[in-house]
Length: 326
Length: 264
Picture 1 (cartoon, rainbow over the protein chains, first blue to last red):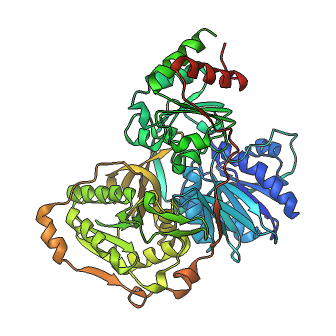
Picture 2 (picture 1 turned 45 degrees about the vertical axis):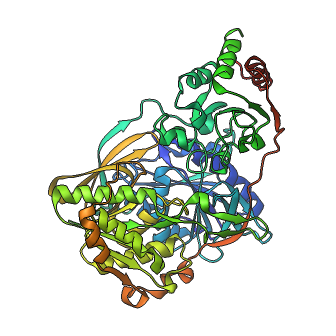
Picture 3 (picture 1 turned 120 degrees about the vertical axis):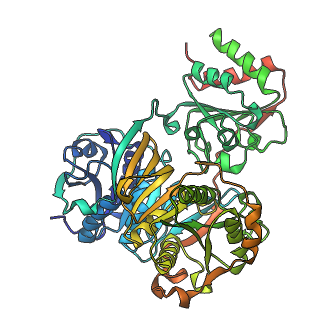
């Protein structure tokens, strides 16, 4: 029996492999802070074919862990997961449900919001409470460095998906909170899809967790080999603008910005990037920004700590030499 | 198979202006374009029809000036076009938008596949396809790069996920969202151009759609825009210099050392 929790704040902890998606833990940290401000309890809800995932979640501060289990729930299926979580929510009536804006997180959120006939704010990069304790999700976009604050004034639960990388996962603590495991009432017809093949990605790239990123844009003319070398020497990752990924110079999961990844590295080198706002929203959280561009008027210099006006090639070669001597 | 392709007409993002004083968006000056991944969805639908037979209907929601964009879809190869257009549909968030599109699909009748783009370039929520699936009680696959016909009338869809590619078997009816760039959309077929010009684009208003008014438009939208503001800019030093490559490299190296990141 799920406890009734009409004020509660719920976080969907999305399982991936034997653990959870990083964004699930990032949201738990932020949700803990919000739940304390609102004086409500925090529940982490997870779905799978077995229990046993709760132990890890208990280290990230929720007051309760709710595990929804059924042998058929071996992998994400938007339809079946909607049924599982939908039933739990209709029983407990939490006020808020936060989800990570991963591909499966969004696959679930869009469907679940309709099941619950409620409002969904997608892809937020910050969460705030207004004067009356109303949750406001801020969404960047709209072309001109503007973000919109979206609320869901009446319907409950209000649903929000959060961009990966915008919050920091709390440090692991001592296990706390209780665990409730609920067997979901489910049958074969509730599944909308069956997996017939899975091809894991050789190396999984997660730019949200990189300390150093070397970004190349149009100004590289597609010559990324030296940028890769620079990233390798710095122990960092290669990032790219939309121009560079659309041109096929770099894989799309390395795209930074509004339609890509929001990053927060300690250092980012931005090479041959003009600095459209659709890109710069992805590096606002960086510790130090160094930009190199041939055009002294490039907007990227407004977003850099150190800006260098000059040709990319010779500067990169000289930098590689000086790093080699270190 | 009857395939419905949901298509959105969006302003060119680079042409949307923002009035910083009033913090209002001005889309009036922006030219419109068919949302990029919707063209990938249309191409997927046309290729599937060409291989297996059936019919492709394009469905959009918006004001009457969107009609010519539906004719583009007809000229590219779609068999029929429907525009859901009524003031009552305006101001819709993803809940109301998905409801209206789903009501249109229900009115069309027997539909096997609904293909959408992964997300729109203006709203960018990616929530409409799975929402349509729920309204229709259909199966769903989002972020798909390829579909092929499976056994017994099923469809196999390959989803691109963060940790790999997953191929799933879907029972129909199914709603599928295609990722941008998943194929090369075909050009306008000039033999079809005349047909597209004279073909009827069906326009359905609220009365003809016969949906539940409580789920339409602004009234059916639980979310609200509480405010607009400028994105907070990090306080950057903004030191900009024009120096020779070696000096430039030395300055960058100093930043790297200061951040304590150089690998020994």
